[in-house]
Amino acid sequence: MVERTKSSQIGEKATLLVEKIFNEANWVCNRLHPDFGIDLYVKVVESEHITPWEFHVQIKGTERPHISKGHIHFAIDTEHLKYWYDSPLPVLFVICDVQSEKAYWLWVKEYLEEIDKKYFDELIHKDLPYLDYLEFVEEPLEIKRTHSDKFDWQARSKFTLRIPIGNQLTPEILPRLFADLRRKTLMHNALRIIGFIETPNEINESSFCFCSPYYRPLPKLDQSIEKPALARCILCGNYFWIEENVAIDWEFPKIYGPYPHEPAVYDCEAPEEFCPVCTSGKGALEQCKNCGRYAVLPLDDEFYEDWDDPLVSGDEAKQLCYECLEELREQRKHESKGSNLI
Image (cartoon, rainbow, N blue to C red; front, side, top):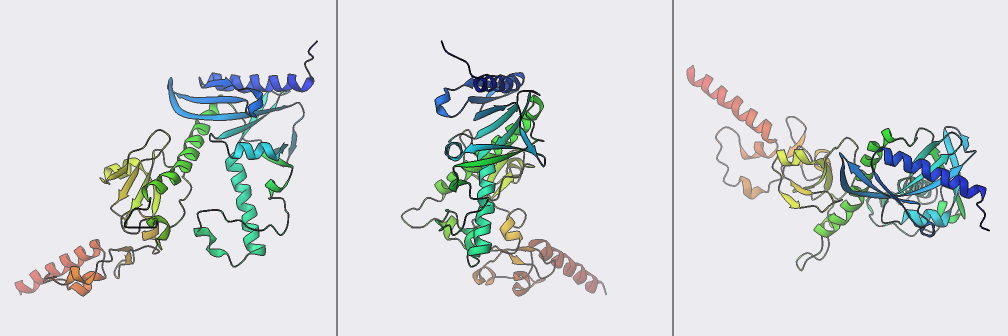
């Protein structure tokens, strides 16, 4: 006779609770074989249309959650964490209090990446202070661990996740989870797309993206950007996130048409307006002598060899942005008309 244990009953209650939440939002929710270490496969439905966005869910049930300082603490085998961390699809960890019928969520990869960042920062500040330049290194480095601390989750057999009690899983919160899912997926695929665009060719043996002195790691995708696209500055070669409608309105050329789960890529032809590297003074733009903005294109001397503007000299033009140059030209044109009337 097959017995049904107390833990299996709790697990079933937890799974039914999570399924009910997704079903109320009309999201497709399918159970997976427990041997996979993943409980559910979920596909997002928006306005009754199935979208290409999908993720996995791992569910844990409990009758007595350990709550401390506004978080639910739950210990997980590190092997499971590594499996979820490396999963090709994002994994949503959900812990259910089957007594109160409440569920709480956490994106596993994003959570562990924050833990890794804290651990890496400790290594740099405590043990490796000379590695300040590592903020520009794209590939993770193998660093010898000289000590163990609370952020070194991979060195333990178990690691405790801390899920904010504010992260309650309800049908109303699912649009936010969908926005998070899109942001994480686009962020991950953006790095691959950049690598594809900057693939070495016969002329250039190394990727410009990584050999450019202006290269910066791609910033996290801000939640305020509703329709994200990538922009590549035509001046310094750096990539950054931009609202796709803005890129279209400014008639930026599209250099990469996306597949599902990918952002489009545009050439930013107005670095003085949009490129965060150029406008910060760390890129190729030069500072305007008049207004102080980094909006002066670094044109070579050949551009000014045939300069024949009677109102503004070539040397003056080199130091001014376009707007200030036009203002100076109009000012001197007005002064010239005034002197002719006398």
